[in-house]
Length: 312
Ligand code: GUN
Image 1 (tube, rainbow, N blue to C red):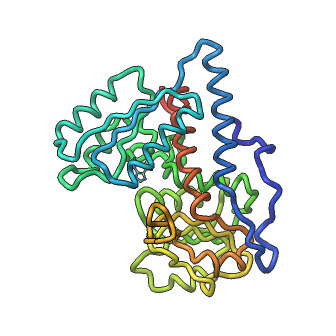
Image 2: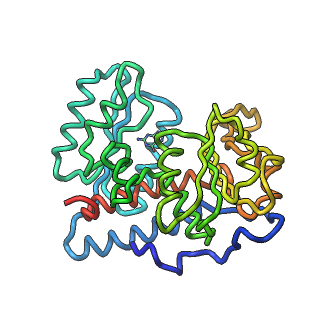
């Protein structure tokens, strides 16, 4: 995919204009457009006699959130023209059995990339499983080799959520050069890789990472041009914590009880949307913001794995 394709950019504002209009960043539409681009490329690859990308997913147990994520990943594979394989295990699978499955997928030449859906049951060492994955098939970008290569600016699989956020900022023409970006949260999956990507050459933001022990979080947020909230606390970022014109990216997806919904819950982001949106120039909704982009970036990583874009 040509990531410099200017036709992919939306005609949207910079960070300089005073009070915000609260324009929505439409992750759902952006993800749909990217999936269509991927499907087009896959079609050409297959027409030319190339191999259809093949993603495998390992799902352990019956966690509701994980079931939904994996189902959506399989559906996204279909939309992109990929082959997909879902390997399901009960949550009494032993660590040794899971590691043997990872090893089998590592050696299966037909599998271009695979993921082990997290969280895993308590008796399994997640880090051990992540490190058992062949980094050349690690389309989640969780293996220390990929994490390290991203940190020093080498081509590698980038963790899907931060990669999706960067893509949204790019497609919505958000100026990042020299801007102050505050990241709320320091997780291995979002906060840490996000901070690496935002400070990278070409993105050029000045980055501050705040977390549960930060004492100046509010002051930092008030100065931020871009806030990426990935702290896992529903409606944490309030209207009086942001300056006018801020760009807000909400990574939170906490299920909160809601009797008016058929499911009995709704997804609540880390941002108090109704209070923050009027001050923001751009803001992602929950759902429909970062979420769809995350799965879409997993598809992009799988396509890159199939093309051996990063590793031989
Ligand atoms: N659990 C929550 N997010 C993710 C993800 O991006 N990848 C995997 N493998 N598990 C997750």
